Image: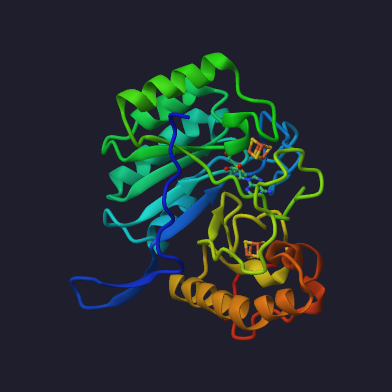
Length: 288
Ligand SMILES: C[S@@+](CC[C@H](N)C(=O)[O-])C[C@H]1O[C@@H](n2cnc3c(N)ncnc32)[C@H](O)[C@@H]1O
Ligand code: SF4
Ligand code: SF4
């Protein structure tokens, strides 16, 4: 396989950023952007219930401004576009990348894609004026292990591009977690890791409905445990709530998963009614 896996970065980093006037703001090292679960596939393991009938909202200026207030703007910051399938609306993704660069986001951008619409994916990558946008491919659809492999023509195009631009197109992790459609319907290689009581501690998500949600794997789970605020919530409160969510994972969620011998994501998907909402969540202005 031409594509390589990327090494994960430090988890849960919130940086103190000082303005010229001396005020301090707290910003996330990474943030996911999610425009809905509309997709050209409907993988039987999909965390977000991806489907051609799924929901979708364009990214807007309000939404991207909220992201820019929340993320580290220097080259260390990373924004990750997922879905759903980003290549279904390439014009909006290309506009969003252009807007973020115009507003001086210097960090890296990652597009999570199944790669089927390979030409559109390459157009998105090439649109970045800073040349710092890369892709991460769905492991199952790139390899054919657990899903129908992408068309040969798409794979050839992406492999050729990666050979010419090493490190631009990576392959995602093979792990399957029990979230969304989850583990039970998964038909891929039995040796692929599936059970772990410890949450991977992902960075949060800003949806194009304007909500900050604590977990990309549970993004379609509307439980109060995941609601960190919305685009009108003070960024300091969003980041405090994210910190409180991580404390809750370590002190409430993981002990419950270990005690009941459950995979971490199964607890979030099927047992949250047994667990309190993180108790120092600050009030959020969204209706949820
Ligand atoms: C939800 S997809 C959205 C982007 C794009 N449609 C894709 O498949 O890459 C983002 C990533 O989640 C991964 N994913 C989906 N379901 C999963 C599961 N049950 N466990 C672990 N990863 C999963 C996919 O393989 C993909 O790498
Ligand atoms: S994993 Fe990706 S390609 Fe598969 S259904 Fe979900 S969003 Fe679509
Ligand atoms: S354990 Fe819960 S918070 Fe952690 S990745 Fe799984 S669904 Fe998300």
